[in-house]
Image 1 (cartoon, rainbow, N blue to C red):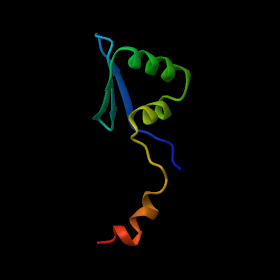
Image 2: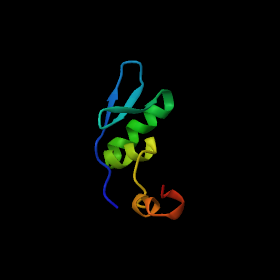
Image 3: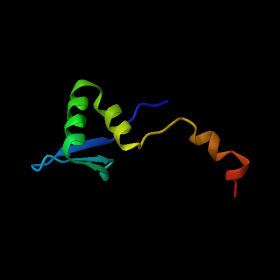
Image 4: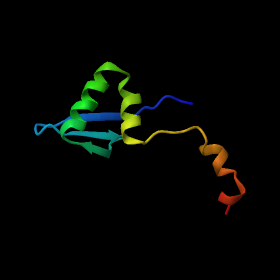
Length: 73
């Protein structure tokens, strides 16, 4: 499975954090969730952390699911 890429985050003055994927807003975290995210992103791989927090990551089965008979049209 390829590593996630294209994620960025911006920390705003009110304590909120906005996570974007390839320039498009993916999610906004506020309050204690934003603080937990910032602590985790500094301690680990930022791309993997942002992919997990947004739920916007590949699971490796997209190509096989496309070929499934139910998905053919």
